[in-house]
Image 1: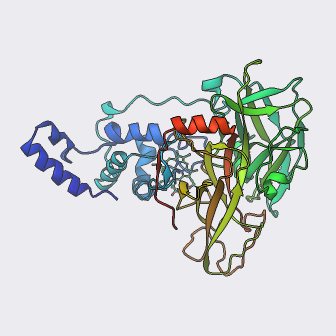
Image 2: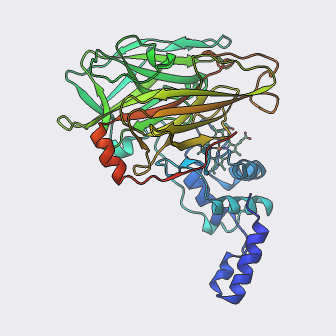
Length: 449
Ligand code: HEC
């Protein structure tokens, strides 16, 4: 946490010696909701915290926000909210969808909460921010209406039930090969969001040209011989994929989506489906590279052995059979998940840390999308090493029962560990050019947990 008093003393000292304007940096002026906090909430919170969303409260008006001031302070200083849990000391640091608060914003929120959460002058309030209707696709602003929307057959989840896996099939109606530039996925209704643990849209098509992804794990291979990888995976914190310029997924005529939707009961009967919006590249505009959504395993041999009251580290290794660029990092674990790190072991034996989430929270399967310049590129033969940590002790607030042994499995109470990564395969030639022009903006510290 930032020591606000120290900052105040230092800047006061500087202002006396050097300039009057530095006095503005002191804590003399009160922090108010109207002037200081409302703009931060508009920028970083209201996308989720407003009426009609899944978040527990709205943070739009003063009256709505005031009762939460203490809880807000606690969540922002621990960097639990906004749900952006990437370790700022390991690996790639530039992201396309960074929603984190700056240190300055956190300091303001702390001072506001500590000084009794005042409203201030209502005249200072910024104009209310306009949000699109909840049934608008997030990507519509950028790409317009989707070219096609695929829907799974609906499913009725009873009020009480074991977890269920709903695996219907939907045909994709394309008459010729089409390149996908963006996909967005969501449960059909707000009620459906509560029962949908996650949903995967597997692309199934006869595609002899597709490269063999290294060590195929169960989540990659379950679609059978024509599995062409996932078109998209939805979980709270992951809503869409935009394929970088010059990259995309190829959909062939005769293809279909094979859904794999994991529902869990929430005490009321809910009927819902999942829908997937697809935006194509214009006909004739063919991206050079194909992107494959891949689950890099954080365990070996599909086996997990989490003893009661124990913290366990597991490791998974996948060889890249072609040069590739990794576009994002999305750790996937269940209730005992504590942390996950991904690093590259290059053919020359050197190790390059890529990303680390140290305080994994099962509520949040946040997808960290690397900025264009920062997405790391690796030569053929690189090993992608994923380390996962599971906390099966009482220290883990999400743990339903630390006395249980836990193994690998699909249910929420079983465990898993894989990193969802969009992998763009490139040629060795491309790798050489790319690597020579590419800034390696990564921090060298290796992850620990
Ligand atoms: C991506 C969506 C999202 C963003 C952005 C977000 N929140 Fe949240 N927030 C949630 C959801 C969903 C929950 C309930 C689940 C949980 O606690 O993780 C929550 C929970 C909270 C809680 C705990 C409420 C309780 O029940 O005790 C606080 C406090 C909070 N958020 C504050 C903030 C603040 C302040 C910001 C902005 C600086 C913010 N959140 C940004 C979605 C979001």
